Image (cartoon, rainbow over all chains, first blue to last red; front, top):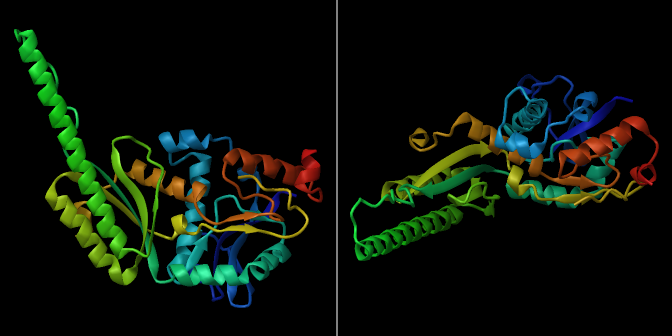
Length: 255
Length: 62
């Protein structure tokens, strides 16, 4: 038993565009208008993974086995997302058999349908903002300052730093408010660096995308923050379901 | 239009991808074999799967 049914996303029942998929094994298991995107995969590469995810996040390498599998997962999700709304499933979701897949769709039909409707017509965008100016200016005092001069200089520097920080934070807050106004939903992302003033994902209706990007440009023009935008993404950050499957193995409830 | 500010280093893009694929997305618990937050759990469960197909994870763990 080294094969399993890898599940990638919940979508609406449709005819898969096989040409767009990275893997001919990918297929749809359907139930009353819903579809679960699955592929019969060799589980050995998953079982052999020994990448530390935290390390992969710090120093990602394209040839890392985890990265290769994650890219494949993303490629499948994206291919379906080109045509239909999707609720991406977390990497490494493996089902026992096609019956389990159909049961999953049956058990959660209402919730999954509702969530698909919610993300339909939307794409996810990631936005990060950081200070455009260095927060800590070069603080090497010139030689020959008196003690009083040194302290006055130090105070002025601290005040300038506080001012820069505050203006950056305010710009980031204004940006977030403007973007959230164009988005249906937003979630903060874990800040990987204290230098980041904003790191969030936005679920944006496609009709609002030009306005969304215009807000980014507007805030860039102000010049307080540098903004990085990533996307469009399938709505990974907005598929926040936890679907308990009824049945035998209910003991699996890791957080 | 977007290119003006969306210049994201590729390594950064990969981090974004990993974060989304590994840490986001709907989670299925229960009679699904694996699907969880950490790779360690995925590995653990896979080994159980590979070793004992018809044993529930609970039994396998005990």
